Length: 378
Image (cartoon, rainbow, N blue to C red; front, top):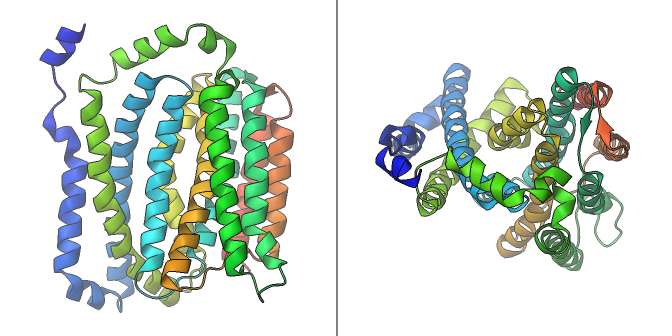
C-alpha cells in the first residue's frame, strides 16, 4: 500500500492557494497607492475586500486539508487538537499582528473572541446538531468530553469578556496591568491543564467507546487513503501557508476599517469577518462529521476551537498590549453580556444529556440570529 501511494504522488497544482496567497500579498505590497485610492471609493473597496477575503478563505481551506491529514495520522484526540490549533493559531496570530500595527484597534481582540463564541457555539454547532439530527434523529457522543470543554470555556469566557466591565482598579471595560498579567497566566494555566487531561490523563473522555477500543486500527485506516505525501511535507506546508495569510490580514485591516466607516457598518464587523474566514473551513469539517454520525468529532472540533481561541488569544493580545502600550478593551457591551451568558447556559443544557437532536440545533441557530440582529441593529 505504501508503495502504491508513493508511486502516485499528489499533483503539485493542488497547492495553488499558496501561490495565490503569495501573489496577492506581493501585489498588495507593490500596489499600496492603488489600495489608498480604493479606500475612497466604496465599489473598489468592496471588490478589494472580496478578493483578499477570498484568497484567505481558499488558503484556510488548504491549511485544514493538510492539518486533517496529520490529524488522522495522529488519531484521536491528538489529531483533532492539531487541527484546532492549526486554525486557532492562525486566527490568534492574525489578531495580534493587526492589533499591533497601524491605527489603534482596542476592541479587535474582544470582537473577534466574542464572534468566535457566537459563530461556533451557536452558528456552526447549531447547523451540526440540526443537520445531524435531521439525518440520524438522535446522535450519541461522550458526555464527559463536552463537560470537560465547557468547564474550561465558562470561566475563561466570563473572566475575559465580562469581568473587565466590573473591575474597580481602572475605569471602563479595561484591566489594570496586574489584572492583565494574572488573567494571562490563568488562561495559559487553564489551557495547559486541559491539554494534559485531553492527551494524557483522560484521553478516553474525547473518544466514543468504539473509537477507544479500536484506536490504532482506526487511525491507520483513516490515514491510508488521505494523502501519499509524508508527514513532514504536510507539517511544512502548514507553516508555508501561515505566514502569507497573517501578512494578508494586515493588508485587509485598512480596507475593512474604511468600509466600516463609509458604509456605516457595525464596528464589530471586523472581528466577525476575521472569525468567519479562519473558522469556516474547520467548522465545515465538523458539520460533515455530524452528518456522518460522528458527533464526537464535531464536539471535539467546535468546542475545542472556542477553548483554544479564548485560551490563546487572551495571553497573546495582553502581551502585545503591554509591549506596545496600546489600549486593550476586553469587556463586551451590556447586550452582548446577556447574549454571551445565555449562550453559555444553553450550551451547558444542550450537552447535559448523552444524545442530541434537532431541537438543540434550532435553539442555537436562533441565538445566532439574535447575535446578528444585535450586531447590525443597536
